[in-house]
Length: 151
Image: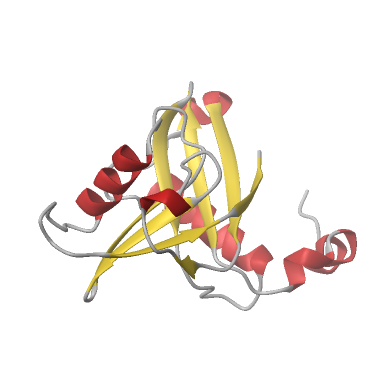
């Protein structure tokens, strides 16, 4: 049974606003897909979540599309991003609290906060650099952001 969008909006006002969203799909705690954006791209957060969930499950280029026999084992989390702010250096970061964006010109890499395996700022930045195809020796601008995470 489909729930009308009007009913969803009535239950949760936040979904009517615009926000950047990442949706992460996991199977048995292993990443199965993750898609999102730094800026909102759809008319509201509800549609942003729906579109990114579909993309995370079926369009993440790192994985084959989710298939029906995987559905019972899927877990999904939604991260609604708060505003991004520039930081002066690694001392302003904390991988358990802040996501990080590294930027060099038009290239950028992002890593969400609170990833269990990421235990240091240096590791968080290194992974974000790799995602943005930014070499270790290249200068980057650093940004941080917080999220509201829903499971």
